[in-house]
Image 1: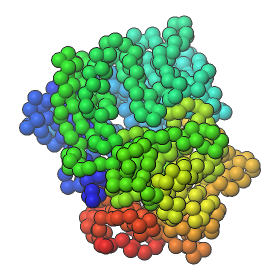
Image 2 (image 1 turned 90 degrees about the vertical axis):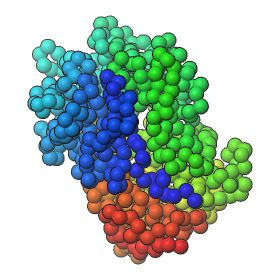
Image 3 (image 1 turned 90 degrees about the horizontal axis):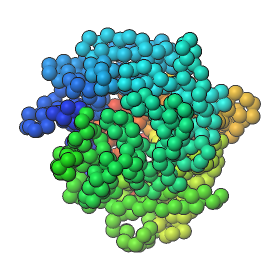
Image 4 (image 1 turned 180 degrees about the horizontal axis):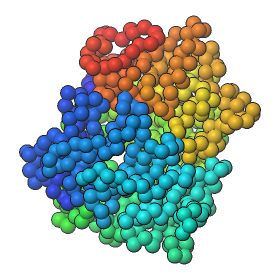
Length: 638
């Protein structure tokens, strides 16, 4: 049995990076259940030293200033997503909060090589809906307004921090590219209609300020990587795939011109655009390191940090020297898992009842896997995992939840249902208005496929999901009592009306897109539709065991979404287990909370599906703040 803590505890090493000058390495490491940042000279790892000493939620992600003098990182308070920006000066070890404004979201907008001691930040201090743009001097903390936000989602700037464009919403839920005029007004220079809004976005300008790069699905289905000549406004397609959207690019460090891009249909694929990186891509593809990507680069582009993993191998970070074509292993992120046997992940395409092609991922327990494609030795208890968003997707690769559940004896199935991202605009738009309808049908169709293939035991299937996935759990249990043996809802909405009424202020630019996708609460017909598809109003139909978990500070799906569902169930005498984490937001960040939740979920599934479980007592999880608000706690040592 793979210990739960090895999969869901803090990694030994996380998010390594190399400084722009190539002299330093930085990473996050765990001590006393809390992640903090460390640095070391690249040539002397023995001189590593800790540079942050957080005792709360920890520090994981970080950025370098372009002069390699500062490490920058963000923190919120108990998951409220009001992030403050902090800096650590490497020479002195001094740590300062650069944006000490309560109730304000700060984020890094841009870090230019031209002004290494000055960065560009977004702050919604003036208006919680729209973030203004400021320069911030790292040494002094002095800030200066660059642009007041006129109601847009983001700005596009050049290396001199001149605002070149802004990206904002249209009244009908589309996106538009805006350009500042000499008089200080903004004029629309390009529009993506509502059908293209989630697949089209303008990215950055080149270092010369003559070309704008974008992801564009207009006049096509999947988004292409395009270049727009700013003098002529002529658009050139640089690359595309008929199966999947372009989801990211690698750019030249000096010109910012795209040199390669990635797509991900069933599996990730890199596409080379420029011969300057072809030898590097060919070399890395030829190494036996699994799927790889660039996590960090030096300013002169001589050294890359390359992260790699596979479906059966957790993350590894390598130092790649481009001229010498040498690859040195730096970090194994979870070394305790290195020699443990992992179950393989398989991909397949399931056809929905209306013909839509759904990319799915299946993991079988190692002792139940025949070795043939998509075939189990006998029908198994199965966990259907539903991703959040829903504007996100499941991907091929190492998945801790797949490994845990397969190790406990379950088949595990992920479904990229309609509205999932990455598969073109027709696929994502097919989910509009289909919360609780065709999006549910896609999940059902994939479950039917697993049953017909002899993979899933129809009487022992669980549905588990977070955020939108939690909504899908509640929807399934209310619409089809008895279909699932149990369900686990993690920070999922129960009432679409109250969910839309609680849209965070900084999502204002998304409001019309949300109304288009979820439903319009401003019309009688829209309200009726939202009510009909909200699990809260059909809670009395639930007959299957249900577990609900919630963070008290969740700004996206407020605690009231879980509270009202639990209240409705209790008032009708329907059993439910409800656990609340008072110091968490949209998901569980602190290690003891993450571990105790996964332990309880594992026990809940074992009780109702019959799989194995790692014995535990709640007292084992020192530091957890979990509160059992409803139901018993029958999860002890077996």
